[in-house]
Amino acid sequence: MNVIALQDVWRVYDQGAEPVLALQGLNLEIAEGEYVAIMGASGSGKSTLMNIIGCLDKPTSGKYVLDGEDITTREDDELAEIRNATIGFVFQQFNLLASMTALENVMLPLAYAGIDLEQRRVRAELVLSELGLENRMNHRPNQLSGGQQQRVAIARAIVNKPRILLADEPTGALDSSTSQEIISLFNRLVDEGITVILVTHDGETASHARRIVKVRDGKILEDLLIGSAS
Image (tube, rainbow, N blue to C red; front, side):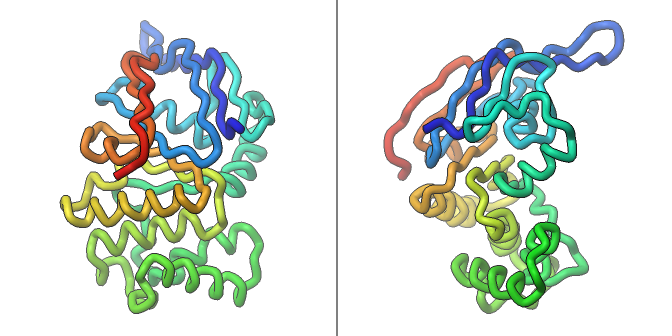
């Protein structure tokens, strides 16, 4: 079953005299539980594609079907609800709140979802423990290594049990050894049934996915199945 279907999607930005064609009639289907790397150079359209998949932006034209529902014309508040319920985000710079502990950072999305305090704590502690951070829960981000911060960010992204995890250059700020740890974690999440979509310009990071979609000039250049992840 396809969890994501983009049909003839265009995204045009009016900037100055000439419109910018960020996406040009793009078609993409992603099945539930897939591990997909979206690759492309700066300006290729991959970030615009990620923003549309993540309900952070809307197509200028075309259709976006998520979980069998056409959400193309949904209002911003509806898209925010869909985003909070369905999609987790992981970023290169972690985006953790410096004044909060790891545990408090991970509890935050649960507060937005209206979960009571005790349940928030229990669920956040469980996810952090599953990611090997049981001894780092009360540390603030500046007391954690880069890899630990990224694992906290992943814990925050999955604590709401999203169907889809979107990761934007998630290993870009990490050394090679720590990057491998994060890639292994993504493999585990895929094995647990989460659809993982990795946006990257790095071929080494992309090579661990099970499908690579290459984007150039707002169009899909290649769509390759590469078998089981290593």
